[in-house]
Image (cartoon, rainbow, N blue to C red; front, side):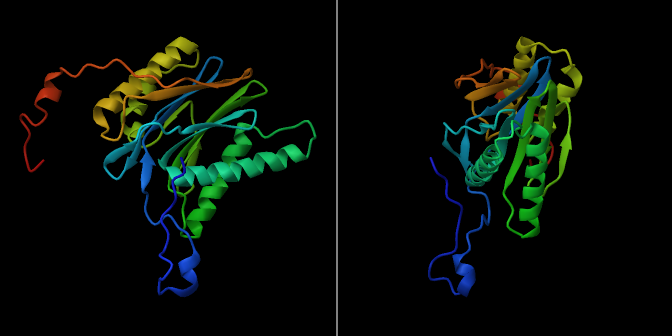
Length: 245
């Protein structure tokens, strides 16, 4: 599945600019990515929806990928730009492997590269319309960070993009601790994804959870969460509302 970014028509009156391809606005987008550190490594969750505007057009879009030996990348935003970022990273990992010096890029180096990439494209007024989550582990040191489409970045023990930054982070701040087991970490991520499913119109009930440890990385098969839609607030969401909303 290849999502092409929007481009100028061939007969444009803009002259040489007609040949440049830019994502003028996001076309097919993915919603939140949520990730956290747990006792043995990093856990990351994302659903598989791809929205064409407000329409959930695609329901089988994978938005988490392994980067090299030590890193895991998740992305919200424009899917075609995410594919472009993956091509950049493929070149980076290939170039690193060509040195054949027994060393390999860790998650901190990949995160720094993504930060410079996003900021560079922003300065060219041709941004990659994504919010990225980069996690990994190397030499026993866990790493988790995020970077926005304009290069704003930080590290933390748990991160989220999109609506998850507003709805999932409060849950993580309250319930996360550094000695989370794998099972507890998965349950916490599932709780966050369930809240997002209830509140985010772009979220779908088909998700994957990825795990990366010193032993390697695995991404689960897609599965659905058990949900309950009989809450009174869901049955009559506008009851008692004041104003035009």
